[in-house]
Length: 369
Image 1: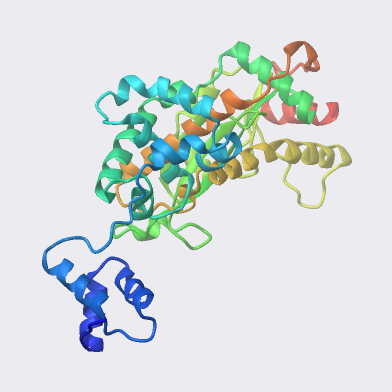
Image 2: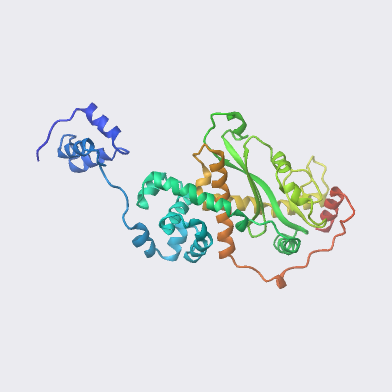
């Protein structure tokens, strides 16, 4: 084999110029004992002609590999069954008419949302340029965010009553139709107002305020406030506080002690060492029921692991990303869950709370448990 001698400095420059050090891997694969061989010459010639050194794109991944996935494998990668994906495609098809090969583009964006892989790796896997993946990600995420009202819907009074029955069956807490809490979404450090986004754990984040039902579906989502903001402040400034004003007096959400007690939001008793046995039991039942919202956030971030860290700077892109993941979370649960018949639910206990204040309402509920 003919060879030439390449100085270490020149070789280092070539590797730095090439993509992710793959040149060095090619050299070592050709001759592990030396960096002087025809592979380096060929790579240098390719660079000088402006040609890519290696093509890492997987050809036919969408058309040949994915169709061979069995159902568990497809769901593991795309977080939903094939039938659910087909329903999602039909739901979004009107808005995706401008997208070439919408199936492959939608699959690539879902893969991107569901993993923490780099844009380059996902683009290579789906046989496209990194810039093309980013472009279509922005389009599809915006489409999902625009259709959020089809995925995340505030319940009617009749639906609240049914949710309260379901929640009492599952957790034994009367009158509760949902659970509210906030969750931090880790983001890249900001150049402006950096301190405002640093939360109490010491990293930059934006807040996601969510309300879910007993099936871990979100019935309300509000995101975008800096991570240093208190949950109660975000609640007061969201439209959720206005929505709760029209909730019937015997129904309510459950929230932790960060929120203020009201007719439509039941919080635990503050424990200063003087709680009665009734109040302690109330707190236990309240905490067990409210854990649903924490599991909902865990399920959301487990399905769409991109939410563990968003390497983004634009506020609107961050908001659309979070909103689209919440919408997909609901769409999957709605189409893949088993619903119980309403006839099997336990009737809601009759509690006369129409003419008492929020504190008295909480005492009445505590006494009924």
